[in-house]
Image 1 (cartoon, one colour):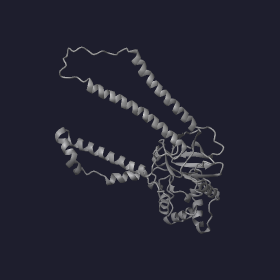
Image 2 (tube, rainbow, N blue to C red):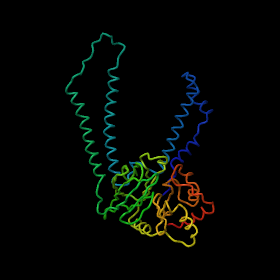
Image 3 (cartoon, rainbow, N blue to C red):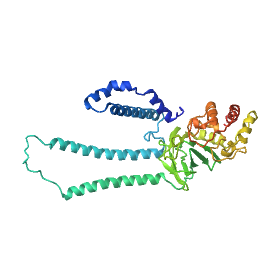
Image 4 (spheres, rainbow, N blue to C red):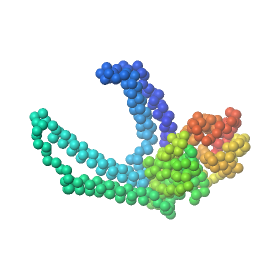
Length: 384
């Protein structure tokens, strides 16, 4: 599946390619409007430019979303199907009310509009003020609609918020950090970051993913639209959620609660695999880090510097927990919580100056020489 580009880059690209030249704007719509509306030319052109640039930015966002669907209607789990059904039910009811009300308004406006032939002394038509049947009808009807929707939503919320994990569920402890995700599999005995692997639901051996959601700092929100609804991660509180995926693939998510400077780049991926693929991934993740003598210099540099104070690499003395666990770093598709593709060049850039990808992140510039950075990266690239 295609790797996800950085969303903001996509928007910037659309903006740069679709930039409106002032002369073109003046020659087209703005000029005509100015002549007739008699408004200050500078204000009109500025307004038109703002509207067009906004539209282009929205189109750029739409292109990104279409390329990597995050639509709640493109469901890939039992849970998202239920959420989608509720949304469609609400949309159908409100849409029907909209059509009925505006159809009635249109009929009354046309049928009972004032006519030139009518005289001012024509008697006032019959009034309905104080009509008990009508008052009761338009009070009871909305209450019934709201009551039905309330029951449907409450039933769904209770269903989506279990407090106990089913016996066959894959359990994951999710911790939100500024600005990355930690995924711990307590029953399997390892921790990974930013990319959550889960097995596909098997109809013959049903299984779910049960998550315990916590925050290490501020409020975050876990949201993968195609798999489940949003659930907040609140400091000093444990929330829970579950989902049952019914289609393999890579599903994209995002922190849905503004949590600081790099909130927009607190991305996540959920990789839904067949049970055999998931078992193979688990088997590899359980292993300690590879100890390749060919990259001993890079390993020594990593452990000698403050890298080891922030990151854990199992099988070494690096046991920091401030940053993501790097034991199997190269098994991930991205670095920086989805900020950049995980490849040699981006690792070089990330270690040299992480703020290139993620301005304001807590990963410091390591002040290593260019040669030392390459040596460290050569070691990291063995962590598969």
